Length: 350
Image (cartoon, rainbow, N blue to C red; front, side, top):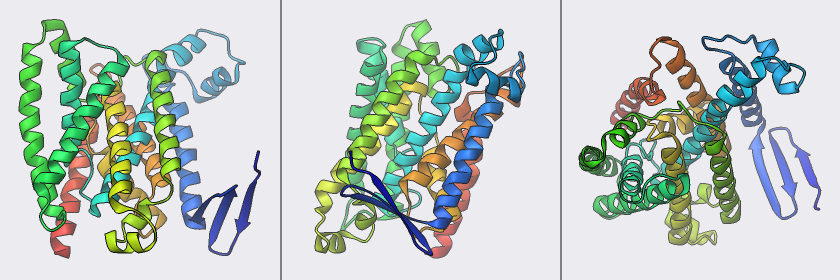
């Protein structure tokens, strides 16, 4: 194995593993570390909340294997899978949002705004209505639906390049059409499946078990490996096609690879918990502001997305304790405010 080497500079830290290297500012390293610690702390608190309360010290004891009481069943079997899925889905949505915002070079170009979420949900519903359930079948349908939607939105909004506002308007229009199609599919389903699909449409982490955590983890690891194979071409694409070509990057080929990965991440999340909105929109921009980076970065966006979704799920469970809200309701309520802020900022810049 090739050993990892760390180069400590005054302003940046460089990690080299063989031919691969990663460079980050000390501020970005500090922010990502702080977010990871915050995510860990929130996770310990989250799995202890509920009608059967478990103190944080007892949660740590269960995870360490020293607490063998009934707390172990509550934490490991009932609550830990949901918390794990919140972190995994939040990270996937954060990375996907960073990819789409970098490709469109627009902070509004997230998969939920331009219709990819709705398209992925349409593909998942189509599979559910024709061949039935199954995580991999539903995820495959979501990938196909998301890819078709992304290509359609890009084609409809392309005129001498993809302009930011034209892309957003076309994406909103396509989302409206797809939402109508989704409602029609739900109506055609049998009563039990229709109720499940209607709740799933809001975006919920309720009822998730280790049976969903394992395939989600495997697929997320595979897509992360694909990102490593593609290499650090995303920051170069943000410079424009001419600059990217001059630096040896094939813009169309790289853009297609990132598009497939971004849609795959959205599809995984949609197949597991439904179309959860606004995490992919807010996480990359919040991470960018905290790290003061010139463009959106994948690792900070992933950690920020995990923290945002976990906090939203805690609010969804605790705001009305007797009536748990879908986590998508909370993310829409918080993310809608952030979307208005972005729209105002974009209008002022124009």
